[in-house]
Length: 115
Image 1 (cartoon, rainbow, N blue to C red):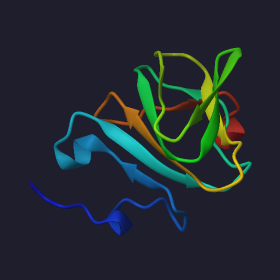
Image 2: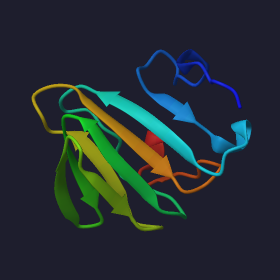
Image 3: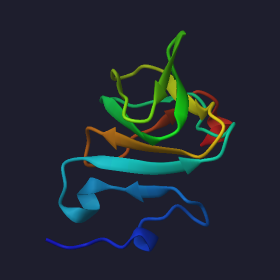
């Protein structure tokens, strides 16, 4: 067992952490995202389920043509190959854990310019 320092998995100069399970002997991967109001990833999809837990704040999550609002403590699941994304629609910081049911992160962006 090893502790992985946050700075070792931080995405560039952002507040987002990106854990790729295969690199650490784990069967899952995740993003721990910290976003300001209005921020969030554009539409994308994965060939496996993704499960979100809102740790703090409010997120509007797009799942295909539907949108749901998730708040602190809520959990949401998106099925494989479903276009999805989320936006911080609250007044403060959004902290959300995005768990990928895969040891590798496989992500296809609806708009390739977002990759």
